[in-house]
Image (cartoon, rainbow, N blue to C red; front, side, top):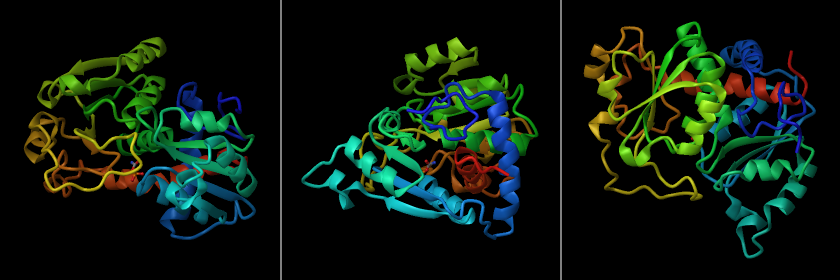
Length: 320
Ligand code: CP
């Protein structure tokens, strides 16, 4: 494993633990440059001689395709798999993560791994000198999602410092664990608003205490509505993050209104509050919210490309 104390060049990115404010600010600065390329819908040759290896053991729309798009916009090549069933890791041989990594390190210069078990990307990073990026592991972390969340907050609100960020829904979701690590670096405050059976796990609260994050817990969006600058809609009743894939079901449970944002609630919130979501959504953000200026989740999804371009360029030592 490569030493994970950033700044980035040649390093793994498997957790946001240890990432400092100056590291985030560097990513924001490089992402602003990359944004010019994505906005112009053009390509550059910055990574023309580099290959990205995708290893997606679980389904994904945003993370996988935005990483592919990021690498393509930087002039690099992409190899890998989007379903382990097409590889020896997912057939009769059940090839181990160790052996799969020892193959992929020959085929690519940086590896992006989504894995169903907590800690899979960290374990993978221990098997190779090629940088490993965590694209979401089990119920643990989703560091690049949180990087683009922070970038979006900074762009949309003008700063992160001192903001109140409300996490609404199930606090077991991996993106809700990484983002508070970043918020602590900017002296922002987190509100964890969840049902009793989906509270922020104790081990994460201990970590937030250790790093000095300011936070409160609440049980309904109504309790915090007037305080929140950024609603981060995590959703409730998610599919299993330990499964490779779960089929759609007709009778998906409806979200308790205590964890839904809608136009009526927005009308009682701060006038400049914004709504973010890692997506996909169910019914926690009804489509009636989409036309409102507060709805910034599609901009957030767009930001995935310049932010992941910045991370690839930084990790491969080629940032402009
Ligand atoms: N936000 C996110 O991780 O989405 P995907 O599961 O589509 O990658």
